Every structure is written in structure tokens, then in C-alpha cells.
Length: 252
Image (tube, rainbow, N blue to C red; front, side):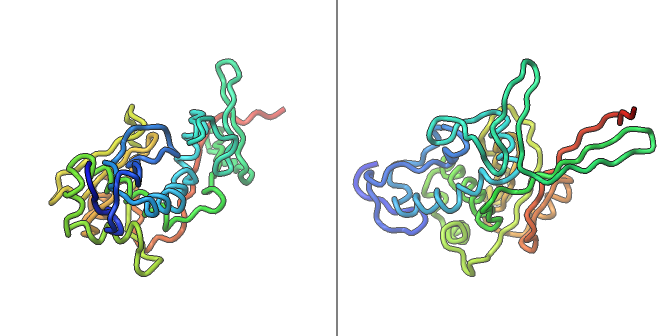
């Protein structure tokens, strides 16, 4: 890029001096998914990183995946604690980690088996509203990488750009769907042929988050058809990750 451009979010003039913005945040893992120089101004990039992207690693599924894999943060070293989950340790062929969570519950089945249920809540300081916006930010910027900046600067995505950077009212909430992805790649985006490709799925460490960048209302029906979790605007309670293990109760 030469000369001046305009910020994708606030539209102020930018230059290569504003640096690079990552579509996939480096807090999740090092990557080269950068937008062109000056695509996002320095102040907007700083705000989105500190206020939105910081919420991603506090989400239970993402925090657990990061700590289980021992993935490094932006500093280049694994984090000792993230979302109440300490980094894992290898013991031969076994692996363990500690979680600052409530005592697990045990349910006995009629066949003599027992099920251990562990609930992993979001990390301290987690904001569900900002997490939603962070997912939409990754989806929008991934679409920019695929189709070009001018594509996501079109009027069709004006509401999404405003929602990500400066929602009005402040507690505005757009829905998203969530499902296990099972994909081998730790981070990538999936584009669904629907209208102007407004529905985008973002795979983050084995969980697929799907958003509607035009907020058309179609995503809820799609989630029902696919039998996946959907968190509409009315859902304010933060999802809790539940881990299950089955076995035989031993008595002496």
C-alpha cells in the first residue's frame, strides 16, 4: 500500500506507520493472517486487541484448549494460568492440569457406573458482550482477507463494523452459533454461500463459531437445522463448559 488509506472501523486517514492488524489474534497463537498496512488505525487496533480479543482466551473452550496444548501467548511462552486453568504437565503417557473450579459432582447410573461432571466457568473479568463482538471482528477481517478490504467496506457490512467497534446501545448483542469443528487446522475461516456470504464460520482450536455479518436473522434457523448451540441476542448467561468422565465406583 502506498499513500494514505482509511481505517476499516473509524474511517480516519491511516498510513503504513499504523502497522499491521491480525485477523486471527496473536493471543491465540502466532500467525501471519495480517490485513494490509494501514487497514486499521493504531487506536482502533489497540482498542480491539485490549478490549475484545482479550476476551477470547477467557472463554472456557478456548482457554482449556490453549492450556492443554501449552500454546504460547504473545510473549512467546506458555501462560501459567488462563481463565482459572493452569498450564498442563506431562507425566509419561499421562497429562494433568489444575483448574480453580468448584468441586465436581458425581452421578450414579442404574448400571453401576458413575459419571463425573466438571463445570468450567469463564475466566475472571470475562465479558460475554465483548466476546461476541470479538468473534464478529475475526469473521469480518477474515472475509476481508478472502474478498479484499473494499468488499467489507461496502454498505452491507456497515452495521457489522459499527457493532464491532462502537455498538449503540453499548449492550447491543448479536447472536452466534457454536459447534465442535473437528478440523485439523487450529485457526481458519469457513465461508457459507448465503446471499453476500454474510454467514462466516471461524474455527478456533477445535470449536467452530458461526456469525451472520449482516444480522439478517437467518443464523438461528440454520443452527436449529444443524442441531448446534445458538446464543441469540436475548441470551445473557455465559455458557459453562461441562466435562464428563465415566467409570465404575470402587467401594471397599
